[in-house]
Image (tube, rainbow, N blue to C red):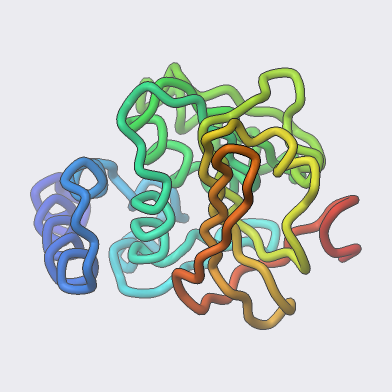
Length: 218
């Protein structure tokens, strides 16, 4: 049955093998968590049969839940060990925040759409993710109150790396963000070490737009 736990567990394990391991995702902690978190809970009921497909899916308010491989490569790039404080910009469905919450000590996640803040909080409670704190705000400003962050993940594409996020990144620290035009971006890994910023290209991607003071206007 499509709504049985065994059905979703089977296709979730297939996702890990065929979409992640086969493409070079090798961090055992990332693979384990993505094999455990019920991704189908983060999409509408009508889309649950497609939740583990090799593509992004629409959620409410014109936003998306990222393709599993993109979630994995962004998460792996942060090299989390379990002790970190992580800032996520763009809560969306809440799926990425839950993945992060299983891999670090604390997640602070910022979302500009109230409906998504509300729906993701319900899922955080349902899955007992008590180390996630969320708020409604302009994510391009970061969350200064809890800075600095050992790692920052931005799940929307901006024209450049927002300066407030660089300022709130710890030293050493790692930041993953899609940067470029609104129709295509470079997924960049930004590393801060001894005051020096370095940038590495991970993948070419297409994300929804990062809206805010240090992003796009619309």
